[in-house]
Length: 202
Length: 240
Image (cartoon, rainbow over all chains, first blue to last red; front, side):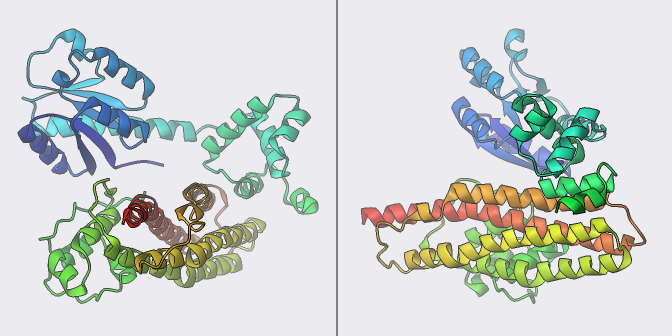
């Protein structure tokens, strides 16, 4: 699913800067949900609960807390970390961020930057959906449709349960369909199984 | 989540312009039993005339415009009544409007596209909707009566707690319901071949999206507004 609303945590002590940033984004025509935070730990908390996809941080807030920031970043690889810069900061500190926004940048370019972060994620999700099922995945799909449990599928194909689960995951990702009855209809529509065979077993 | 390009709604905005921007707000007003003739009223005035807490209305309306509720809500026991009214009316909308609508589209679809897949889709939809109904009936039977007692400060016996309205079981149920609805959309849009049924299919997919949107809002309200509020009331009742 394409998520257009970006939930953004902002760690910025200045009210003026925060309001200005928020105003620029609201004029961009795309929806963003900003959550203003007072501390790095609050961002961590939001990240743990999957509430944000992006964090905009004034680097002064992580000075001397590099290690903590690094750990949080490592735990949440899906989140994009952006530095909001209007003082001089050490290059090393800035290099910990994925992207930087400079205070002197034009509003359009700031909004564009944030938008592009979203778009690149959207493109990724499109790519995966174009793939065809592999032969092995089709074997697994046929057995799912028959109503076999993971263990039974593993035994009949001589593979581990772990592999079955990973095939199932790929099948759902490629087809966009998660339920067994949904996959059955998919398999019939795509002539992977014959309707007569399906009717016989039911 | 359903996409709207709505504004973040504030009390001084005119409700009629907001509705033209996102007509789904009419559904919100319907669920809250509000009058549709809104004249030139602002959100604030609309809430006053209808005796609805402005803060609660803003949270709900903004949810319809695509903004998730924040954790800082100052809702009280009195708001519980409005929330339950909203949820009950939305149940009614699913069962008595949306389900029959989609069901009848599927019947027509089968008449035009007499294929085995469509027959299976019909079966799939019925099974799916039975699960939804089971969930709705559980709420009507177990959850709402409990909230009503809480609302009226009737002594709640110790073995009857919020745990009964099991949040975990709920979330599992919600996820399952969302999966299947999504499967239906995927199948109709990507896989099941079209046979002269384009118009109908467009109507079905649009209708499924509407249902999905409202179901999503419904579960967000339960998970992020209703349950926190109920827990808050329970705690305050205990300490009093």
